[in-house]
Image 1 (cartoon, one colour):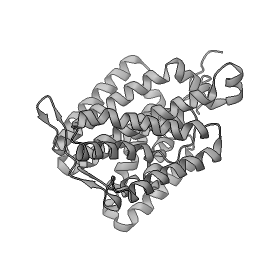
Image 2 (image 1 turned 135 degrees about the horizontal axis):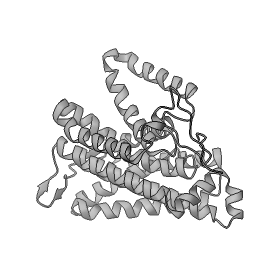
Image 3 (image 1 turned 135 degrees about the vertical axis):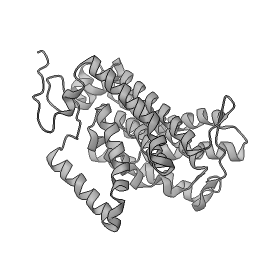
Image 4 (image 1 turned 45 degrees about the vertical axis):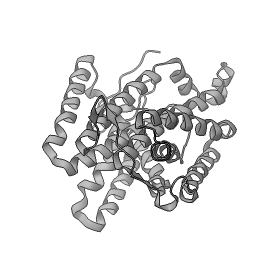
Length: 327
């Protein structure tokens, strides 16, 4: 059956704004221009906050592959974030490698971690998978807190910022533009994956694993691929996070971080790239915009999230199914 258009509504207006290629190109150009001039207009503090938001965009897009594309509930995504950060920290501080040599190692160890935890557990479904991923995240955090190589509870400090073609990436403005590039690359890769054969396999597995397996799709391998690709996103985000701050500790990779990343995916709209980006910015910027309310700001933020979930359970900007229904 041909796709049926979604009827415009007060909540559904976002889904019809970019309904033609020309409008999408204009919107992309405006967004890129806004990203370039934003730190010049709002100052250094806003630049740091926006950099953090862009980091969460990268992480949320990685988790979106796991949750939004493949339909897997992952409550320990911060573990891959930690693997990337600690690999770069250990490789640069203990072995004298520069950042660009440590980055592939971070990706490699994240892939290994994804395979180790994913192979025996991705046969599980629903709540059982969520519990296992939660345990994995806590194991990584506790290991980082207790191992001498990771600096124990104090973490690692003195991580050098990278050089790129003679350019020392060291200031908040430098890292802002680096994370802009990372976010753009993450978006492009996510779009290509969604439209690939593997992306269609993820979609089938998400909707009905048994039917997908009956069609010849190896659901375990497909889900493991989603887990590994998401791990790569997390490791790259963690590597640049460590280089940006110059110091990391286990508290940076707590369960709360996994929840915030998952919140960005669900709040924005699972499976919808613009929605996930919007969710990441809301999760990071909303508490900052409410800072004038003092101790009440997190309460107001939580109430706002609750209202959105009650009246917009599929997310602010949800993906569309093939029949035009929101999912």
